[in-house]
Image (cartoon, rainbow, N blue to C red; front, side, top):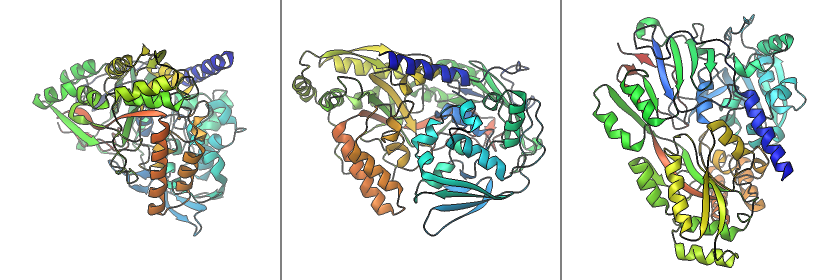
Length: 549
């Protein structure tokens, strides 16, 4: 127990140390009406856990970093299709193990915190951005953290070498072919940071400012961050894709106004204090539609909400208990009551829109009598006491964590499982989950790259079951893991589909989660905003967004 306590304390301390500190007081009101300095205010649902793209895992934090950074390859907005990013082109060897990237010429980095870049993007920046995550002895590996997501994806063991071929060319050598390599590079952790800025901070003795005062190449540059209040950016006039011109209604100042309460976000939107609102509640959608000043922007997202069962903790180490929990929960009632028409009942870790989703798997059953029999068989005829952690904020995959937890607790009580509800503030909640504290926990995931691997491996693979990994169930099944790892080593869609279907059947038998829901995501905007859209990968992007007045 003391070892677990030390681990939890270390995880919480790491996240706390990485939380960006306020650098300067934000000037002016958080919300400025459209037309006054072209300030667009986005009412976001929570604090980003970091502003270092190599450390972020939530869509909240990824959206915060996407305003400032670019990667070598990117997903076109609103799609899962790859397009060139900071690399204008790339070549892949015939055996699929060598990737050569040619960088764009003349891409400028932002100036920030006393730093003015002396040169454009070059190969040194790419090497710095990946070596700090790959090599444990890299100075900025120790300064940043353990880069668990890079590890969970298997990149630490997959990459054989990264080489600077010349000023504008970089080569990645892999130990084996990997069908997920390119789409993985398009994720937030693949953002390219300035090596020159890192050297500047190291000379000043402030390497932690890499996460507190970020420098990227994106359409907006960082200004300041006040946790629980606001994150502020300014338009970057030297943006490599071409800056938006003021006469087109382009946004000059972008503000993330941190507003965890859904009702407060809607009130601020109606009052004109913000222009875009994250995730209105299902009960508020008709009110948004009825308001002549507001509009809904909706789209299907590749996501899943789930109840993870910590298989490292008795009694969840017994698959009979886990299957009993799954059988006891009326997931359809939860979706109807909490999600409404925006939700669909989940039957697998994969969303139905994924090409690897197994449509032949039968629906998960709801059968309290069978659940009670399984509990008795496992030695818990009278039930047991446990903890059930619920999300403290609304998320695109779960609009009301407390209500979902209440309904699950009531369902479990009917078979004798007595669950005590627990939560923390968002960053502490995540630290507890990734640290292995809860026995049962509500969480969810939005795909970062659209590939089935991003669910089946990142969330349930054996490597990700290590402390700090995204496999919150701490479940490691060798047969399951062999299937998902084999699926990465081929680009044959037929073979990959067969392997992922095998993995889904193994998941169903072991029941490390109770899949709950997939969602259509809604964002609410004021009608003075043009060009904003939802994204299947959960990104909130403001490049190209303008005012119409």
